[in-house]
Length: 351
Ligand code: NAD
Ligand code: UD1
View 1 (cartoon, rainbow, N blue to C red):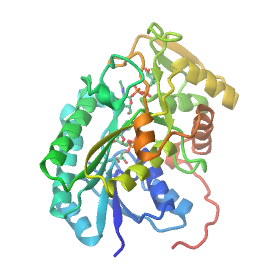
View 2 (cartoon, helix red, strand yellow):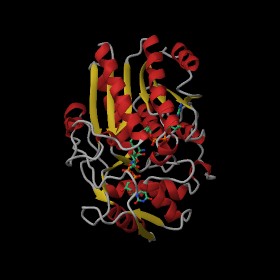
View 3 (cartoon, helix red, strand yellow):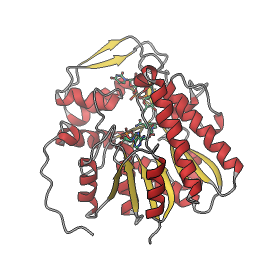
Protein backbone atom coordinates (compact mmCIF):
# COMPACT_ATOMS: atom_id res chain seq x y z
CA UNK A 1 0.00 0.00 0.00
CA UNK A 2 1.26 3.50 -0.82
CA UNK A 3 1.49 6.17 1.86
CA UNK A 4 -1.62 8.32 1.52
CA UNK A 5 -2.64 11.75 2.76
CA UNK A 6 -6.15 12.11 4.17
CA UNK A 7 -7.70 15.47 3.19
CA UNK A 8 -10.76 16.40 5.26
CA UNK A 9 -12.97 19.02 3.59
CA UNK A 10 -11.28 18.08 0.32
CA UNK A 11 -14.30 18.94 -1.85
CA UNK A 12 -14.32 22.55 -0.59
CA UNK A 13 -12.63 25.65 -1.94
CA UNK A 14 -9.12 25.47 -0.46
CA UNK A 15 -9.28 21.68 -0.03
CA UNK A 16 -9.89 21.05 -3.74
CA UNK A 17 -7.02 23.33 -4.80
CA UNK A 18 -4.68 21.71 -2.28
CA UNK A 19 -5.72 18.25 -3.45
CA UNK A 20 -4.76 19.21 -6.99
CA UNK A 21 -1.36 20.49 -5.82
CA UNK A 22 -0.75 17.31 -3.81
CA UNK A 23 -1.70 15.00 -6.68
CA UNK A 24 0.45 17.00 -9.09
CA UNK A 25 3.36 16.55 -6.66
CA UNK A 26 2.81 12.77 -6.65
CA UNK A 27 1.03 12.39 -3.29
CA UNK A 28 -1.71 9.75 -3.18
CA UNK A 29 -4.75 11.25 -1.41
CA UNK A 30 -8.13 10.22 -0.04
CA UNK A 31 -10.75 12.91 0.50
CA UNK A 32 -13.40 13.00 3.22
CA UNK A 33 -16.19 15.58 3.01
CA UNK A 34 -19.83 15.62 4.09
CA UNK A 35 -20.63 18.09 1.27
CA UNK A 36 -22.39 20.51 3.64
CA UNK A 37 -20.71 23.41 1.79
CA UNK A 38 -19.52 21.77 -1.43
CA UNK A 39 -20.60 19.22 -4.03
CA UNK A 40 -19.40 16.14 -5.85
CA UNK A 41 -18.88 18.04 -9.05
CA UNK A 42 -15.65 19.47 -7.60
CA UNK A 43 -14.33 15.89 -7.40
CA UNK A 44 -15.36 15.24 -11.01
CA UNK A 45 -13.49 18.39 -12.03
CA UNK A 46 -10.42 17.29 -10.04
CA UNK A 47 -10.49 13.96 -11.85
CA UNK A 48 -10.69 15.79 -15.13
CA UNK A 49 -7.73 18.02 -14.26
CA UNK A 50 -5.53 15.21 -12.95
CA UNK A 51 -6.63 12.45 -15.37
CA UNK A 52 -6.91 10.25 -12.29
CA UNK A 53 -9.54 8.63 -10.19
CA UNK A 54 -9.76 10.57 -6.91
CA UNK A 55 -10.69 8.51 -3.85
CA UNK A 56 -13.59 10.36 -2.23
CA UNK A 57 -15.60 9.36 0.82
CA UNK A 58 -18.80 11.23 1.60
CA UNK A 59 -19.01 11.40 5.36
CA UNK A 60 -18.55 13.40 8.52
CA UNK A 61 -15.31 13.95 10.38
CA UNK A 62 -17.28 13.47 13.62
CA UNK A 63 -18.12 9.88 12.64
CA UNK A 64 -15.56 7.86 14.63
CA UNK A 65 -16.50 4.51 13.08
CA UNK A 66 -16.05 5.93 9.59
CA UNK A 67 -12.65 7.39 10.49
CA UNK A 68 -11.57 4.05 11.89
CA UNK A 69 -12.57 2.36 8.61
CA UNK A 70 -10.64 4.92 6.60
CA UNK A 71 -7.49 4.52 8.71
CA UNK A 72 -7.85 0.72 8.43
CA UNK A 73 -8.36 0.74 4.71
CA UNK A 74 -5.66 3.22 3.64
CA UNK A 75 -2.02 3.48 4.70
CA UNK A 76 -2.38 7.07 5.87
CA UNK A 77 0.73 8.88 7.06
CA UNK A 78 -0.57 12.48 7.31
CA UNK A 79 -3.81 14.43 7.49
CA UNK A 80 -4.57 17.86 6.03
CA UNK A 81 -7.59 19.08 7.95
CA UNK A 82 -9.78 21.65 6.16
CA UNK A 83 -13.25 20.54 7.19
CA UNK A 84 -14.99 23.29 9.13
CA UNK A 85 -17.95 25.60 9.08
CA UNK A 86 -16.68 29.06 8.21
CA UNK A 87 -19.38 31.72 8.14
CA UNK A 88 -18.84 34.33 10.81
CA UNK A 89 -22.45 35.54 10.66
CA UNK A 90 -23.87 32.02 10.91
CA UNK A 91 -21.55 31.23 13.82
CA UNK A 92 -23.16 34.03 15.83
CA UNK A 93 -26.61 32.47 15.27
CA UNK A 94 -25.56 28.83 15.70
CA UNK A 95 -22.56 28.79 18.07
CA UNK A 96 -23.17 25.21 19.23
CA UNK A 97 -23.11 23.92 15.65
CA UNK A 98 -19.82 25.72 15.08
CA UNK A 99 -18.16 24.39 18.23
CA UNK A 100 -19.54 20.88 17.58
CA UNK A 101 -18.44 20.80 13.97
CA UNK A 102 -15.10 22.54 14.26
CA UNK A 103 -13.81 21.76 17.75
CA UNK A 104 -15.43 18.36 18.34
CA UNK A 105 -14.70 17.38 14.73
CA UNK A 106 -10.99 18.10 15.24
CA UNK A 107 -10.94 16.33 18.61
CA UNK A 108 -12.52 13.28 17.03
CA UNK A 109 -10.05 13.34 14.15
CA UNK A 110 -7.05 13.56 16.50
CA UNK A 111 -8.36 10.65 18.59
CA UNK A 112 -8.76 8.55 15.45
CA UNK A 113 -5.28 9.55 14.27
CA UNK A 114 -3.72 8.60 17.61
CA UNK A 115 -5.49 5.21 17.55
CA UNK A 116 -4.12 4.64 14.06
CA UNK A 117 -0.61 5.91 14.98
CA UNK A 118 -0.79 8.77 12.50
CA UNK A 119 0.85 11.85 13.99
CA UNK A 120 1.32 14.36 11.17
CA UNK A 121 -1.35 17.00 10.87
CA UNK A 122 -1.72 20.24 8.90
CA UNK A 123 -4.52 22.41 10.28
CA UNK A 124 -6.36 25.27 8.53
CA UNK A 125 -6.19 28.13 10.94
CA UNK A 126 -6.93 31.76 10.20
CA UNK A 127 -5.63 35.27 10.77
CA UNK A 128 -8.81 35.62 12.80
CA UNK A 129 -6.88 34.17 15.79
CA UNK A 130 -4.90 37.44 16.01
CA UNK A 131 -8.12 39.32 16.86
CA UNK A 132 -7.72 43.06 16.30
CA UNK A 133 -3.93 43.29 15.92
CA UNK A 134 -2.06 46.05 17.73
CA UNK A 135 0.10 46.59 14.66
CA UNK A 136 0.64 45.38 11.11
CA UNK A 137 2.26 43.50 9.49
CA UNK A 138 1.42 40.60 11.78
CA UNK A 139 4.17 38.10 12.55
CA UNK A 140 3.49 34.80 14.31
CA UNK A 141 5.29 35.95 17.47
CA UNK A 142 2.73 38.72 17.99
CA UNK A 143 0.74 36.07 19.88
CA UNK A 144 -2.95 35.42 19.52
CA UNK A 145 -5.57 38.02 20.32
CA UNK A 146 -9.23 37.79 21.18
CA UNK A 147 -11.36 36.60 18.25
CA UNK A 148 -14.74 38.32 18.36
CA UNK A 149 -17.08 35.57 17.13
CA UNK A 150 -17.68 31.83 17.69
CA UNK A 151 -16.07 30.90 14.35
CA UNK A 152 -12.86 32.69 15.31
CA UNK A 153 -12.97 31.30 18.84
CA UNK A 154 -13.40 27.77 17.47
CA UNK A 155 -10.15 28.23 15.48
CA UNK A 156 -8.30 29.51 18.55
CA UNK A 157 -9.65 26.66 20.72
CA UNK A 158 -8.44 24.15 18.14
CA UNK A 159 -5.00 25.76 18.02
CA UNK A 160 -4.77 25.46 21.82
CA UNK A 161 -6.02 21.88 21.76
CA UNK A 162 -3.36 20.99 19.18
CA UNK A 163 -0.64 22.76 21.17
CA UNK A 164 -1.57 20.69 24.23
CA UNK A 165 -1.49 17.55 22.12
CA UNK A 166 1.97 18.30 20.71
CA UNK A 167 3.23 19.06 24.24
CA UNK A 168 1.89 15.77 25.54
CA UNK A 169 3.50 13.42 23.03
CA UNK A 170 6.66 14.03 20.97
CA UNK A 171 5.42 11.85 18.12
CA UNK A 172 3.08 14.61 16.94
CA UNK A 173 4.17 16.97 14.13
CA UNK A 174 1.55 19.65 13.66
CA UNK A 175 1.41 22.70 11.39
CA UNK A 176 -0.99 25.54 12.17
CA UNK A 177 -1.34 27.46 8.92
CA UNK A 178 -2.88 30.87 9.51
CA UNK A 179 -4.38 31.95 6.21
CA UNK A 180 -5.06 35.60 5.53
CA UNK A 181 -7.69 36.12 2.76
CA UNK A 182 -7.56 33.38 0.11
CA UNK A 183 -9.12 34.37 -3.22
CA UNK A 184 -8.65 33.36 -6.86
CA UNK A 185 -9.07 30.00 -8.50
CA UNK A 186 -7.10 27.43 -10.47
CA UNK A 187 -6.06 28.91 -13.82
CA UNK A 188 -8.14 26.30 -15.70
CA UNK A 189 -11.34 27.95 -14.46
CA UNK A 190 -12.63 24.46 -13.60
CA UNK A 191 -12.43 24.65 -9.81
CA UNK A 192 -13.07 27.65 -7.59
CA UNK A 193 -15.03 29.05 -4.67
CA UNK A 194 -18.71 28.10 -4.69
CA UNK A 195 -20.30 28.89 -1.33
CA UNK A 196 -23.78 27.52 -0.66
CA UNK A 197 -26.36 30.28 -0.21
CA UNK A 198 -25.62 34.00 -0.16
CA UNK A 199 -21.87 34.64 0.05
CA UNK A 200 -20.32 36.70 2.87
CA UNK A 201 -16.76 37.17 1.67
CA UNK A 202 -15.76 40.07 -0.55
CA UNK A 203 -14.65 38.35 -3.76
CA UNK A 204 -17.62 35.98 -4.13
CA UNK A 205 -19.95 38.95 -3.51
CA UNK A 206 -18.09 41.09 -6.02
CA UNK A 207 -18.05 38.46 -8.78
CA UNK A 208 -21.74 37.68 -8.21
CA UNK A 209 -22.45 41.37 -8.81
CA UNK A 210 -20.31 41.27 -11.97
CA UNK A 211 -22.17 38.20 -13.28
CA UNK A 212 -25.59 39.71 -12.43
CA UNK A 213 -26.57 37.37 -9.58
CA UNK A 214 -26.47 40.27 -7.08
CA UNK A 215 -27.63 43.80 -7.98
CA UNK A 216 -24.79 45.73 -6.31
CA UNK A 217 -21.97 45.39 -3.85
CA UNK A 218 -22.38 46.66 -0.32
CA UNK A 219 -19.14 48.17 1.02
CA UNK A 220 -19.20 47.88 4.79
CA UNK A 221 -17.77 51.09 6.21
CA UNK A 222 -15.88 54.00 4.64
CA UNK A 223 -14.75 55.68 7.85
CA UNK A 224 -11.92 53.37 8.92
CA UNK A 225 -8.47 54.88 9.61
CA UNK A 226 -7.06 53.43 6.39
CA UNK A 227 -5.81 54.69 3.04
CA UNK A 228 -9.33 55.42 1.71
CA UNK A 229 -11.60 54.68 4.68
CA UNK A 230 -12.39 51.08 3.67
CA UNK A 231 -10.92 47.95 5.32
CA UNK A 232 -7.55 46.62 4.26
CA UNK A 233 -6.82 42.89 3.94
CA UNK A 234 -4.02 40.62 2.72
CA UNK A 235 -5.57 38.79 -0.26
CA UNK A 236 -3.64 35.70 -1.33
CA UNK A 237 -4.08 33.39 -4.32
CA UNK A 238 -5.62 30.07 -3.30
CA UNK A 239 -3.00 28.16 -5.34
CA UNK A 240 -0.25 29.88 -3.32
CA UNK A 241 -2.09 28.75 -0.19
CA UNK A 242 -2.28 25.22 -1.60
CA UNK A 243 1.47 25.22 -2.27
CA UNK A 244 2.05 26.27 1.35
CA UNK A 245 0.36 23.02 2.44
CA UNK A 246 2.64 20.92 0.26
CA UNK A 247 5.70 22.61 1.79
CA UNK A 248 4.34 22.20 5.32
CA UNK A 249 3.70 18.48 4.74
CA UNK A 250 7.27 18.05 3.53
CA UNK A 251 8.72 19.79 6.60
CA UNK A 252 6.55 17.78 9.00
CA UNK A 253 8.24 14.58 7.80
CA UNK A 254 11.28 15.49 9.91
CA UNK A 255 10.12 18.24 12.32
CA UNK A 256 8.25 17.06 15.39
CA UNK A 257 6.34 19.51 17.58
CA UNK A 258 4.05 22.36 16.70
CA UNK A 259 4.80 24.91 13.99
CA UNK A 260 2.94 28.10 13.16
CA UNK A 261 3.12 29.78 9.78
CA UNK A 262 1.28 32.76 8.34
CA UNK A 263 0.19 32.28 4.73
CA UNK A 264 -0.18 35.79 3.35
CA UNK A 265 1.51 37.98 0.76
CA UNK A 266 2.64 40.79 3.06
CA UNK A 267 0.64 43.40 1.10
CA UNK A 268 -2.73 44.87 2.03
CA UNK A 269 -5.43 46.20 -0.32
CA UNK A 270 -8.52 48.17 0.63
CA UNK A 271 -12.03 47.19 -0.46
CA UNK A 272 -12.10 50.12 -2.90
CA UNK A 273 -8.70 49.16 -4.32
CA UNK A 274 -10.04 45.64 -4.92
CA UNK A 275 -13.16 46.97 -6.67
CA UNK A 276 -11.11 49.28 -8.89
CA UNK A 277 -8.57 46.58 -9.72
CA UNK A 278 -11.41 44.25 -10.64
CA UNK A 279 -12.86 46.91 -12.94
CA UNK A 280 -9.44 47.53 -14.54
CA UNK A 281 -8.69 43.85 -15.10
CA UNK A 282 -12.12 42.80 -16.40
CA UNK A 283 -13.49 46.05 -17.89
CA UNK A 284 -16.71 45.46 -15.93
CA UNK A 285 -18.27 48.27 -13.91
CA UNK A 286 -19.17 47.29 -10.34
CA UNK A 287 -22.08 49.24 -8.83
CA UNK A 288 -21.64 49.63 -5.07
CA UNK A 289 -22.87 51.67 -2.15
CA UNK A 290 -21.47 52.33 1.29
CA UNK A 291 -23.21 50.87 4.34
CA UNK A 292 -22.33 51.03 8.06
CA UNK A 293 -19.41 48.98 9.32
CA UNK A 294 -20.01 45.21 9.55
CA UNK A 295 -19.96 43.97 13.15
CA UNK A 296 -16.67 42.28 14.02
CA UNK A 297 -14.61 43.73 11.14
CA UNK A 298 -11.19 45.12 11.95
CA UNK A 299 -9.72 48.11 10.10
CA UNK A 300 -6.67 46.48 8.64
CA UNK A 301 -4.62 43.36 8.71
CA UNK A 302 -1.82 41.97 6.64
CA UNK A 303 0.82 39.35 7.22
CA UNK A 304 4.50 39.28 7.79
CA UNK A 305 5.01 36.01 5.87
CA UNK A 306 8.81 35.89 6.33
CA UNK A 307 8.79 32.94 8.76
CA UNK A 308 7.17 30.71 6.11
CA UNK A 309 9.81 32.00 3.70
CA UNK A 310 12.65 31.06 6.05
CA UNK A 311 11.31 27.71 7.30
CA UNK A 312 9.40 26.39 4.29
CA UNK A 313 11.06 28.14 1.36
CA UNK A 314 7.55 29.32 0.50
CA UNK A 315 6.28 32.67 -0.63
CA UNK A 316 3.17 33.83 -2.48
CA UNK A 317 4.04 34.15 -6.18
CA UNK A 318 0.80 35.37 -7.76
CA UNK A 319 -0.08 39.06 -7.79
CA UNK A 320 -3.43 40.80 -7.40
CA UNK A 321 -4.03 40.99 -11.16
CA UNK A 322 -3.65 37.23 -11.48
CA UNK A 323 -5.89 36.63 -8.45
CA UNK A 324 -8.61 38.74 -10.05
CA UNK A 325 -8.19 37.25 -13.53
CA UNK A 326 -8.42 33.72 -12.16
CA UNK A 327 -11.40 34.55 -9.93
CA UNK A 328 -13.23 36.04 -12.88
CA UNK A 329 -12.37 33.16 -15.23
CA UNK A 330 -13.89 30.74 -12.71
CA UNK A 331 -17.01 32.84 -12.10
CA UNK A 332 -17.64 33.72 -15.74
CA UNK A 333 -17.20 30.11 -16.93
CA UNK A 334 -19.39 28.91 -14.04
CA UNK A 335 -22.03 31.56 -13.35
CA UNK A 336 -23.80 29.15 -10.98
CA UNK A 337 -20.63 27.62 -9.61
CA UNK A 338 -20.55 23.83 -9.80
CA UNK A 339 -24.22 23.83 -10.79
CA UNK A 340 -23.38 25.50 -14.09
CA UNK A 341 -23.63 23.37 -17.19
CA UNK A 342 -20.07 23.12 -18.40
CA UNK A 343 -19.05 20.76 -21.17
CA UNK A 344 -15.72 19.35 -20.05
CA UNK A 345 -13.40 18.71 -22.97
CA UNK A 346 -12.65 15.02 -23.59
CA UNK A 347 -9.98 13.76 -21.26
CA UNK A 348 -7.39 11.02 -21.57
CA UNK A 349 -7.97 7.69 -19.85
CA UNK A 350 -7.82 7.82 -16.05
CA UNK A 351 -5.01 6.24 -14.13
P1 NAD B 1 -15.21 25.38 2.36
O1 NAD B 1 -16.51 25.53 3.08
O2 NAD B 1 -15.20 25.58 0.89
O3 NAD B 1 -14.56 23.95 2.67
C1 NAD B 1 -14.78 23.26 3.89
C2 NAD B 1 -15.27 21.86 3.52
O4 NAD B 1 -15.47 21.12 4.71
C3 NAD B 1 -16.59 21.89 2.76
O5 NAD B 1 -16.46 21.14 1.58
C4 NAD B 1 -17.58 21.23 3.72
O6 NAD B 1 -18.57 20.50 3.04
C5 NAD B 1 -16.66 20.36 4.56
N1 NAD B 1 -17.13 20.07 5.90
C6 NAD B 1 -17.60 20.93 6.84
N2 NAD B 1 -17.92 20.27 7.96
C7 NAD B 1 -17.61 18.97 7.75
C8 NAD B 1 -17.68 17.81 8.56
N3 NAD B 1 -18.16 17.84 9.81
N4 NAD B 1 -17.27 16.62 8.04
C9 NAD B 1 -16.79 16.56 6.78
N5 NAD B 1 -16.71 17.62 5.97
C10 NAD B 1 -17.10 18.82 6.46
O7 NAD B 1 -14.18 26.37 3.06
P2 NAD B 1 -12.72 26.80 2.61
O8 NAD B 1 -12.76 28.24 2.26
O9 NAD B 1 -12.17 25.83 1.66
O10 NAD B 1 -11.98 26.70 4.00
C11 NAD B 1 -11.19 25.56 4.33
C12 NAD B 1 -10.62 25.75 5.72
O11 NAD B 1 -9.84 26.95 5.75
C13 NAD B 1 -11.67 25.91 6.80
O12 NAD B 1 -11.20 25.27 7.97
C14 NAD B 1 -11.74 27.41 7.03
O13 NAD B 1 -12.15 27.73 8.33
C15 NAD B 1 -10.27 27.79 6.82
N6 NAD B 1 -10.08 29.19 6.44
C16 NAD B 1 -10.69 29.67 5.31
C17 NAD B 1 -10.49 31.00 4.94
C18 NAD B 1 -11.16 31.56 3.72
O14 NAD B 1 -11.15 32.79 3.56
N7 NAD B 1 -11.71 30.76 2.82
C19 NAD B 1 -9.68 31.83 5.72
C20 NAD B 1 -9.06 31.30 6.86
C21 NAD B 1 -9.27 29.97 7.20
C1 UD1 C 1 -13.79 36.80 7.10
C2 UD1 C 1 -13.91 36.49 8.55
C3 UD1 C 1 -12.75 35.65 8.98
C4 UD1 C 1 -12.69 34.37 8.15
C5 UD1 C 1 -12.66 34.72 6.68
C6 UD1 C 1 -12.85 33.46 5.86
C7 UD1 C 1 -15.19 38.34 9.50
C8 UD1 C 1 -15.17 39.47 10.46
N1 UD1 C 1 -14.03 37.69 9.32
O1 UD1 C 1 -12.58 37.57 6.94
O2 UD1 C 1 -12.86 35.33 10.33
O3 UD1 C 1 -11.53 33.61 8.48
O4 UD1 C 1 -13.73 35.61 6.35
O5 UD1 C 1 -14.13 32.96 5.93
O6 UD1 C 1 -16.22 38.04 8.93
N2 UD1 C 1 -16.75 43.35 2.49
C9 UD1 C 1 -17.57 44.30 1.93
N3 UD1 C 1 -18.68 43.87 1.26
C10 UD1 C 1 -19.02 42.55 1.16
C11 UD1 C 1 -18.16 41.58 1.74
C12 UD1 C 1 -17.04 42.01 2.42
O7 UD1 C 1 -17.32 45.50 2.02
O8 UD1 C 1 -20.06 42.23 0.56
C13 UD1 C 1 -15.54 43.81 3.18
C14 UD1 C 1 -15.51 43.43 4.65
O9 UD1 C 1 -16.15 44.41 5.41
C15 UD1 C 1 -14.01 43.34 4.89
C16 UD1 C 1 -13.41 42.93 3.54
O10 UD1 C 1 -14.43 43.18 2.58
O11 UD1 C 1 -13.53 44.60 5.20
C17 UD1 C 1 -13.05 41.46 3.49
O12 UD1 C 1 -14.18 40.72 3.95
P1 UD1 C 1 -14.24 39.13 3.89
O13 UD1 C 1 -13.94 38.67 2.52
O14 UD1 C 1 -15.54 38.70 4.49
O15 UD1 C 1 -13.01 38.66 4.79
P2 UD1 C 1 -12.66 38.99 6.31
O16 UD1 C 1 -13.70 39.76 6.99
O17 UD1 C 1 -11.29 39.57 6.33
